Structures are given as C-alpha cells and as structure tokens.
Length: 81
Image (cartoon, rainbow, N blue to C red; front, side, top):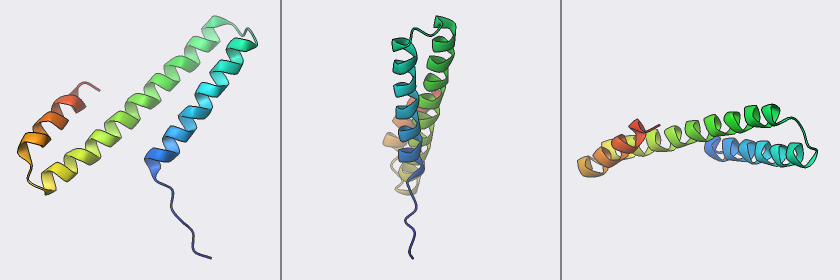
C-alpha cells in the first residue's frame, strides 16, 4: 500500500492544536495557573519553531528563485524568531 507522507508543518500545527485544546481543558478543570502557564509557554515555543521552519523554507525558495528583495524581507522576519 502506498503511504502518503504528511507535511511536517501540518503535523506540527495539528500537534499544537491538540496542546491548545488540552490547555482549554486544564483551564475548565481549574488546574493550577502555574501548570497552565507552563503549557502556554510550550505552545508559544512550538509556534515560534513552526514560524522559523516556514520562513526558512521560504528563504530557500527565494534563494533558488534569485529573488533577493523577497529573501531580504524573509530573513528580516526570520531574525525576529
């Protein structure tokens, strides 16, 4: 059977969606705020990694296409993460 490889960005975003759903449940269950804050920090870090991955991929495309102006914009944004 032919297996379709899932896009790693989509896989990461799906995992983050699950983390956010878990945080909502933690809040509803009145879990300690420190535990919730730890999970929020983990989601923030995960989102930053996805942003870096997307921008890194785009930088590669701009570089291959010799689009220096777009590459400059992407690299500036990448440096924010």
